[in-house]
Image 1 (cartoon, rainbow, N blue to C red):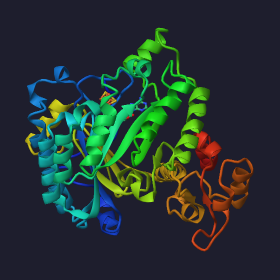
Image 2: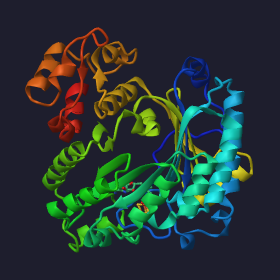
Image 3: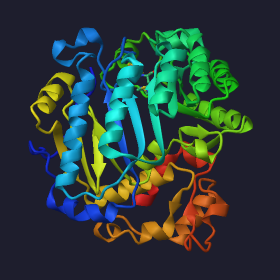
Length: 428
Ligand SMILES: C[S@@+](CC[C@H](N)C(=O)[O-])C[C@H]1O[C@@H](n2cnc3c(N)ncnc32)[C@H](O)[C@@H]1O
Ligand code: SF4
């Protein structure tokens, strides 16, 4: 089962924002605003996955695939009213992301219907990026066409690996042949494409990983996400490792595979722009994910979905049945919320900026209002020099310039492998 939610203050049933957030909202008018729509269904649960997703057998009739579109649209209407009541600036959506679970387990026409309602309620900015995640078995030329005609612009396919024994260890049930077929269908419909891959699965050799990368690159997607396998506590895979049925993951092996990913991706024309993400050109980056990493605002709709608005995070009740009950009664599905204090704001700024290719603007960080109220110190030129000398930060980016008077920290390949350790050095 998916893991438990974090603790936080309770969300009032009317969902009303606290005064601090209402006061901060007008100043957010120029920040991008995104929408995440969670679709909590999968046909099979993969043994490594801790996402908030359920098979049909897990769910009773109170939260069926058939009733879900109306349920999630009820939350979208609730979101519109809550934002209006708070006097939020009128911001059209710059990105929409349908994630899961497996959004494409719903018929394409239903995803189109939800998107249509999203557009009616929030409006789209020019060039709004609209992505759906998909499992390779659930995309056909017809469904891709329906999605493109409805306004989706991007499809992100869960490929994970091209090697049968690795797919088996991951409990993936998709037919590997369906990856090129689904990818071709998306491209033919005019959708941008992204492929998700996982490296470091127990039993995966370096050759296996190189084969998966080659197969992904050969399809020429616009974007590739390569995630190191995380063994999440409480998953079936964690139990298999504990019982000795699978070897544990090896961080050195994962580091070797990350280096291979960077080299092969670059050689094929894909540039890293976030530690796990590579795009064929700047305009193929996932704007939705970039917004998460750059302190933007987003509403997350659906069971267990997380939202962020003007320094407040909140998260919905996790199980689809109580979630449905609440939104159908017109009460907030929010389970908990918290205002980010100075410490959390500074830490989040460091962690997220260090992960992206634009890096951390030292002058901007050193003048963050929250920095003075936190335990952290400003970043000195001496620390910056040490990081470049140790090969962790790019020397050219560290140089002061007109736009970055105190330079930037942009991680090198070595630095990306040690991103968490670099973050720890900057918070003390
Ligand atoms: C919601 S899923 C994508 C869509 C679809 N459900 C699928 O898997 O085909 C998002 C992605 O998260 C990644 N992921 C899930 N669990 C992971 C884990 N434990 N470690 C690393 N990556 C993981 C997978 O690459 C997966 O494609
Ligand atoms: S199909 Fe995707 S969301 Fe569903 S269990 Fe597998 S990785 Fe998780």
